Image (cartoon, rainbow, N blue to C red; front, side):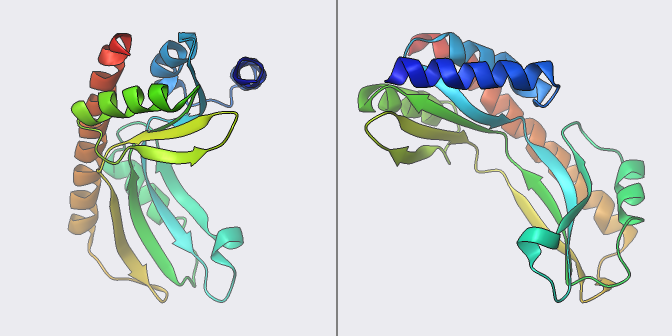
Length: 192
């Protein structure tokens, strides 16, 4: 069962690669995990910073939008260009930094434990088991680094440009720290 699921999932990944639907920055670790007999990735992201706008009087899940999001280390110019895209009316605008994240299917609980121990010992303290069923165990690998900072409320920007620059600087620094942790994990994957 696990082998069939892995084959099917990797076929979908190969299609996504052909169609340029993958986060290329994370592929070095995705490839290494997928080479292992007892593991395969189900989704992955190298992390990002961005600005998200939440609408007023509309369902946020459907109508929220990214004003800008960057998997690279964004510049102040990109930040202010994104802010120029805001709506006239919004409920909230949030500056976000999301940690890199890997969802990895493990063949059994013993394999999942080894993966988690490797993650914890390399600073990825927010890692956990996300789901367990007869087919596989899904392990989520991620850091504790995160930023969710309100910058606009009820149609008004509530911070100045200098503070926006500080948020971006902190976001980029946390993104780098997180990616360094993912790379340390990558270097230790041969031990599992």
